[in-house]
Length: 451
Image (cartoon, rainbow, N blue to C red; front, side, top):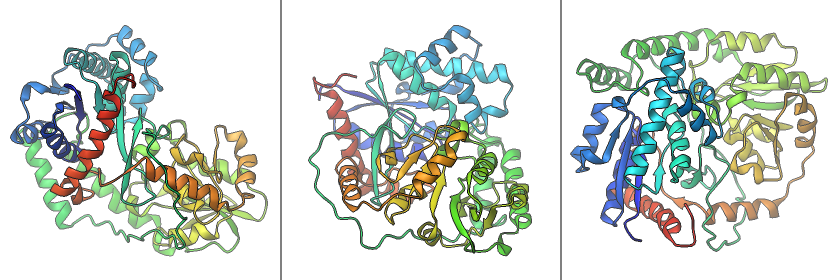
């Protein structure tokens, strides 16, 4: 490797995870840069770790002037439009329209220039916020790779690298595959989640956030205001109380299609889902597509309790063939007993393959390669695709081949945000994960691999 240059984006505690990986990469000879949304306390975290301030692009300082030509150039090098980027962002979508477009112009131009001026070869990033989607376009425009490290979910405790903002293009390094058996027993850990408005975590987290806003170190386009954060906490508590989760059944009495909901907002829905962002309308569409005698079993995500307005479940309860299922029910038992599983891009459809249940997704995800997972692109196609999913046959050989391929092209380790999983910033995990990043860097730094 000869002076290969990489950059990391950073938002919330994922920036902490990336910082520890980056530190290991610098020790292995990589030139490291950062593209930060602007919160000063995050930038200070990087400089305190020894990173040069001159290698950090601060997007709080960009020119936000509206530039139609820049937006057209950005869209030319993107799989989504500027409007799509804004509508997918939980905070930017609440801004004034011209200001939101101006912000994307500034991000696209600043990141393009930063990549070009510093001859950056790869940008490692999340794909959650609009600025990251604009940064992906800037990479394409400037000739750099935009790569997202993300858990592959199964096998557990492994992650892969995806090219671009979606999770359909797993980067395969053509490493030798070995046949892996399908697990004899496959289960998903049940994590009981009871949201509490008043808890030590919420209490200390709120006042840390308040302190950062008071000293003006937290302001950027990915940080919620203190007022917004307070309102969200109160709304969640009210929604949990009013949704009636405790009275919901745990298993439908009739034959059913299982539809676990996404947490909302969430990148797997807002970014990967895109046009299928409205889950209430999707429930209605699936319900319209089912034959008489079959119901849709709708279950709230345990980690998303209270995020959704309680009226959602009152609307689904009005539908003639929809049953609301308790979020405390066993998700794996629901999958095993379902005729099919439906989700925008959720892991439940991946899990269903391992128990011989067909599924339907509405996004291009890497596990669409499984013969039991069907991609739907039109509301009018749901009925026929559901019928195909409900008639699939268990194919252990195909599952074993798929599992071997994913294992051969993924890595052990955790790349989650530090808040979600403290393991991410443990010294040994950071060391092991950085080796995987170096694998990718060396793959693209070889003369045969064009950027």
